[in-house]
Length: 246
Image (tube, rainbow, N blue to C red):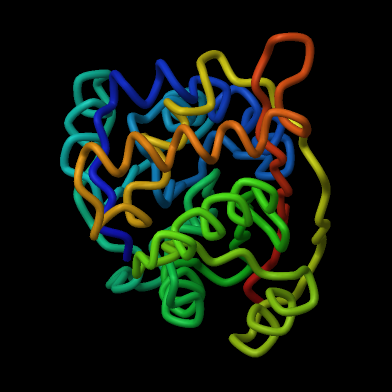
């Protein structure tokens, strides 16, 4: 699990679009009023809040205590829990996750825990970073870090559809839908703020001054590709999946 620290207020300033773009995923979940739903990586509960009136019970979990506090402030049932070590047993009709699973670098453990958490015929619906996600950013960032001789940690897991399908089927899931697609996304702020919020793990061995310098270099490298009509974008690639527990 990434050691990235989250500030709910700053997160929404930089990436309020994440929850908005995840709303269509609810149509794939199709919650029923009798359902119990688990939201894995719920963050501040923006989508958990959308699920709540559609089912009998929803629980949001997140590894960030700060995000869980923000979710609870919205009147949601949420708890701090590492999705790599889920201990639920056939308690949920559906497991939902948006923009979170790519932070969990032991996917077999996560999928196993989700499988156990579901009741028979329960559904797992998720969207997260897939193969090639933010590829231009990752390339520019690692190029600049390596040029400076800096040792870094890539905190992300961006699988292909084929690789993730294999893990799901291996665990016992029936795969109903999976797709990998591009989502070139405009940012509400400067790219440097996105880098500061989401790329903390890359800068573990970097002091404040050097970090600022590297971020400046990265943004200069990315201007031709990601600055469009004065607005910064991220070259997101998303993996969307729906699987059923037999």
